[in-house]
Length: 330
Length: 265
Image 1 (cartoon, rainbow over the protein chains, first blue to last red):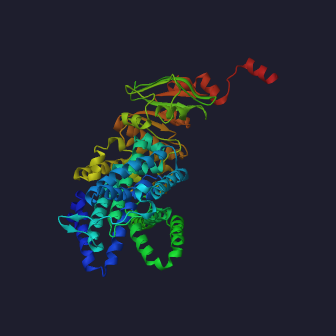
Image 2 (cartoon, helix red, strand yellow):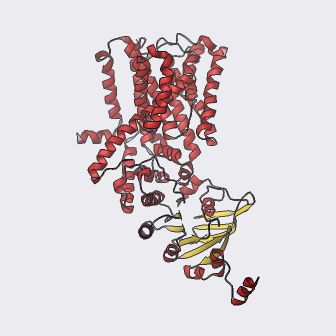
C-alpha cells in the first residue's frame, strides 16, 4: 500500500488512468437506461466548467459572474464551425478552447482595476453581452439555435448515442480534472491563492499579480471552452441561447460554492451533487432557482468552505489531535 | 552598498510623506529606522519595495539594479523581501502554504511543466516543502503547519510572517515593526530568532521599531525620520544623544535661559 501511494505521488496521472478505467465500466454495470448516461455526460460537462470556475474564483479569488458567457463562446464556436465549415468534433474542440481563451483575456482585463462586487458586475455584463450578441445575430441563427451538430466519430466508430458519447465526455473530464489538479497543486496554485488573500503582499513576495490574474482567467476560459464544445456536440446536438443565461451561471456558482471555494475537489463535488439534485427536483421546477439560491446563501453562512472544506476539517482535526494530544477547533 | 536612494520623495496631495531622503546601506549591516508616527518610515519601505511609485527625480538602487520604476514583483526577484506592519498574512491558507508561497521567486520549474504534471515537478515540490518545514521548525511553528494561518496566536503570526519573508532567501530583509504588540519575553525570543536567521542566511536587515531597547541593542546603526526627512544617522549611541532626535521625540531641549523666557510668557 505504501509503495502504491508513493507511485501515485510521483506519477499522479496513474490515479487518473485508474479512475478512467473504473468510470469506463460504470455504464454497463450500473446504469439501467440511456437517460442515466445522458445525465452522466451533463455531470461531466458541469465538472469541467466548475473545475475551471474554481481556478479563477476559488483559487484566484476573482469574482466572475460571466463564466457562462465563456461556456457559450465554446459551444457557439463549435456550432458555427460546423454550420459554415462543416468541421467535426476533433477540429472544433481545440479551436473552441483557443477562441474561448481569447475571450477569457477580455473577461480578465477588468480584474486589473476592479475587485469583488464591482468585478462581478463587469463580468456579469460581459457574459450577458455575449449571450445577447448570439441571440440577436443571424450569423448564429439567433433564437432558432443551431441543430444537428454531429457527434464525433473515431476510426469508423460513431459516438452517436448518449451511452456512447459518455466516453467522450468522460475522457475530456478526466483530462481537464488532471490539468486542474496539476496546476492547483503546484506553485501556480499557491500564487493564485496568495493573490486571493492579499494582492499587495503577493506582489511584494515576487508574484506578478497581473500575469497570474490573467492566467487564471485564460485557464478557466479554456476549461469553459472545452466544456462548451463537448456540450454542443452532445447528442442530439442542439444549442440555443437560452442554455446560457444567468440562471445557468447561478447553477455553476452553486456548484463551486457548495463543493468548496478554493478546495481542490470543490467544483467536482459540487457539480456532481448539484446536477443530480437538479435532475431529481425537475418536477419542482418552479422552486429550483429558489433552492439553488438558498443553497448558496446557506452554504456561505454555515459552511464557508463548502463540502470539501468540511470533510478536510474533520480529518485535519483528527490528525492534529493525534499529533499533539490537544483539541484545536475554530 | 546594497541599497541606495537619492533625493527620494513622495507626496500625497500636499503632504510630503518622504522629502528628499538620501539613504545608503552597506551589506551585512543591521539598520534601525526610528521616528514618531507619521514620520514616513513605512512610506519609505513602500517606496523601496515598489508598492508606491516615487515622485519624479527620485532614484533607488538595490544591489546594482536601478529599481526606481520597477514593479514590486521584479524587485522581490532581485532579492528584496519585506514584512508589513499589518502583517498581511494569507489568512485562509495553511501555515505551510503561507511559507511556500514566499518561495515563489525561487521555484525552479516552468509553468508549462506544472500543467503537464511531470514527475520532476513533484520531486521539486517535495524538496521545497521539506526545506520550508525546516524553516518552520526553526521558528517553532512545525506543529501548526497544516492549520490555517488565521488560527495562530498573535506571536505565532509574527513568526510566520518572518518565515514567509525569509523563504525567498533575500539579500535584504526589511522588517516593519516585527515586534509590535508582543510581550517583552516574546520580543526577546523574536529578536533572537531574527539574529540567528541573519547569521544563517547572511542577511542585511532594516528594522522599523518603536521599542527603542530593541533598536539600541541589536542595530549597528540607526536612521531617524521626522516629517518625511532624515534628521539623524549614526550608531545607536550617537543618535541617542542627538539634539534633533530628542526634539522630534520629546520636544525641544532648552538651556536655563530659554526655559525662563518660555515660562515667563
